Image (cartoon, rainbow, N blue to C red; front, side, top):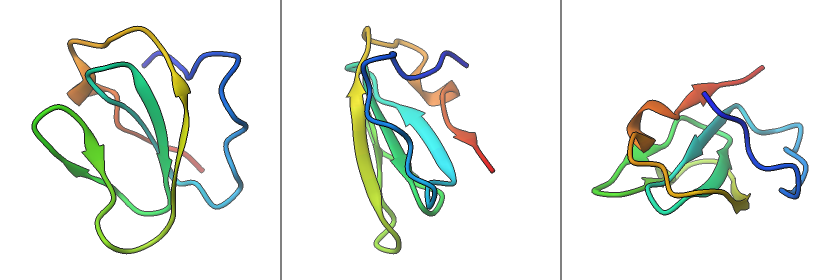
Length: 68
């Protein structure tokens, strides 16, 4: 997995998941997100935060990663 760009916001301590959308946007989520047509979205529980923008990612579905 590629990591969020260096200019991205710092990942908050509550974040447990990182993911990138098709358009290149990086997000962190408190709980495992749902997969949409071109992006990840919160599952109605927990917090989420847009971290920044990277290059578009045609394999964005492979970007979801659990972090500790």
